[in-house]
Length: 501
Ligand code: NAD
Image: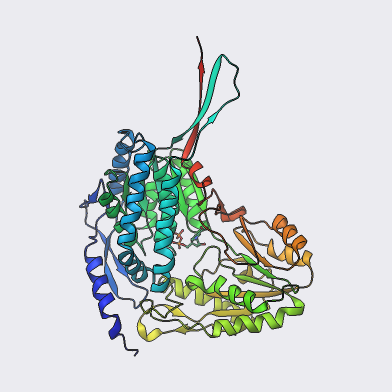
């Protein structure tokens, strides 16, 4: 058993932080008691041990949270606030998050199983950056004046929708929630957020921090619990105007059904992907491409909707590239998420680890070549770890190359020419991200045009930030997070015409 004595201080701090988060929903500015006091165990993927308990909210708590959010919206206290004042409050919120960054990083690490180095350097700073980006945008986004005759003044303004329901998954709980929370708050809406039942701690802490920053009570509410209970109640609520969702295709379909069966609320969907990562023979720096191909799938234990889960290699360099990617993968060993040197942490849950390993077994039983990994790791820790895994020569129509695995599993295939590369790349039901490495600019732009994907990265995987829209084509969903475009989905456009007497 590894020596973990150096982790005693962070573990003690985590225990303190988790104890400060009661098993209650955060409604109207405080953690509120529940009608039935039902709770769920909150287990850390790091070692399978219980961190604390969270509230198992149901229709009653969701009703209460939506009613508070609606009252906060209707009062005008938030939407009617002068833009610069709302901006200052959100900037203060971001500064408080920054002061508490280490607390957020520790909680996110223990709750998700992702490495502390990632929560410190990525999840938490990115969430703060997102909040600042939309805060700053508040007094810089204008409406429109129409081209009307001199006898009339016509203008269009963006009106907030009202109560927004945010439903998010467990892979980047704080970061992805903030992609929705920040633009929704910036545009004057009020919110009820339902984090994943596996990872609710950062959202609960976030709501408490918002109150500390001076955001009015009722503006940001959190209901925890199960998807088919709290999530479904939110999706069916008659006073919720939009469900902003990130998660699986299956849940996306259920949300559309719930909207159709309730108040026809809008639904924005950020769903899964099976993103192709294409390397052409004219790209000379194979080491660089291999490093990014490996981390394009293994980052966050492969639990990234935009993971480059299909590596497509031009045949003449296929062996050389595969060797290099295997070398990178072999050097990545899963480790304790709290250890600062760990770059690959635990998968989110035992159930998810089992599902990913079942896909690897599927590959084995179909005679596919497991080029590296393919095994569970660190089982003695009690946590949910596996080795980075590469499956070679996967036929493009095999289910492994078609369905999302959402784990550290890379499927590799070779192609002979541009047409074949494009056909394989576009040959799934998804269209989230795509990447290519080529020295040929004409080919680069031809592929950028022809790839069916919401994001195309040329000569650098995932080379984007908050300034560019994020979202998918086809069954990867619709609606965009990030960039100023994200603000549009939280608003309605109102056309006003004034006729002069
Ligand atoms: P999930 O769909 O099971 O859960 C996501 C959220 O939806 C959770 O909060 C869950 O409680 C809730 N939910 C589940 N059933 C519900 C229902 N019937 N009604 C309302 N809410 C419900 O997904 P997951 O397992 O948490 O996350 C993994 C999936 O999310 C993967 O498929 C992945 O591709 C996708 N994902 C997509 C993106 C993206 O931006 N496109 C980002 C991250 C994850």
